[in-house]
Image 1 (cartoon, rainbow, N blue to C red):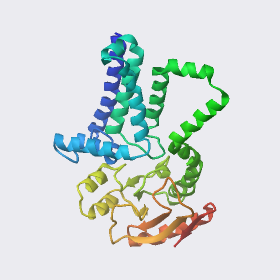
Image 2 (image 1 turned 120 degrees about the vertical axis):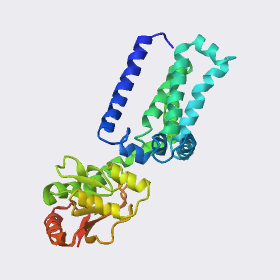
Image 3 (image 1 turned 45 degrees about the vertical axis):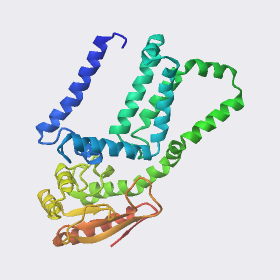
Amino acid sequence: MFRKLRHAAVVILLGIFSIGGFGLYLHSLGLPWLPSSVLFKSQVASAGMDMSGNSLGSFLVALGRNLNSNLDAYGGPQIVVMVAVLLAVFTRFRNPIDGFRSDPVKGVVGLFAALISFAHLTGGRLGSYSRYEVYVVVLDLCALALVYREPLNAWLRTATIPGHIIVAVMLVFLFSGYARSTLITPAAAAYVYDESYQLRRFVAHYYGRPVAVNHLGIIDYRDPQYVLDLSGKGSEQARRAIATRQPGDWIDQLTRGHDVDLAIIYPNVGPPLPASWHAVGRMDLRGHPHTLPGNTVVFYATEENEIARIVDDLRRFAPTLPRGVSLEF
């Protein structure tokens, strides 16, 4: 828009080479062009990669469902309202072209923020401690400050301290969900420490062999042992099995193929487990964790002859658990 064509070309090429190069790297490993975690969490991405549908229609349906879901989620209406206020700046002119000519910076900034917001609402995701959409909210707020800079500057010069306080309170009220996320983040981090971090500590320092899980997280952080993810976020084989609804024996095949004798499972999260597995212990966390699938984790031996060894490792681990976390056999 500002005739800086060389700058634009560099940005476009960097985007193509970085994202395209990463896709080529995944493809060279026999994986899809996008990471399994993205395909698992995004119906739009999986439909676009022709993984859950094989037509343009399925992709459009995924876009519509995703947009509807985001509009129902906290943050969606706020983004829509901010975009509407941004685009309202063009209503002062007979057509948008006049608006761009009168102040091209306002026009480009407003259109850019609106485009990014629309792209995120249709193809992106909201929620989960606001980490997905917070960049859009900040972008829209900054765009509003620039597009309406004259009235804002005029108000800032004349507003009293009570006026500033009222506006600040109104902003907190309008974005109260984000205020709540900020306030409960310390408690959420404490739950991660009490459960996920303890599981990682057990696997890395007590068990010391490959494990299977149905919820990834810090459990595989700097853990030299293989971690098989049965949810599909970190294993393309598991994701394909879940997406195509293969029978339950695929779990046995994966665990045996990766020499996994222990599975650490949240019982309220899928997929269904083989009936041949043996539950040997249960770890419970007091309270209502915000960041975890549940407050109970069950330890399963995938082979009967491994029960004694797993129980012995768990008994050595149990006395080291923090207050509020219990381990029963």
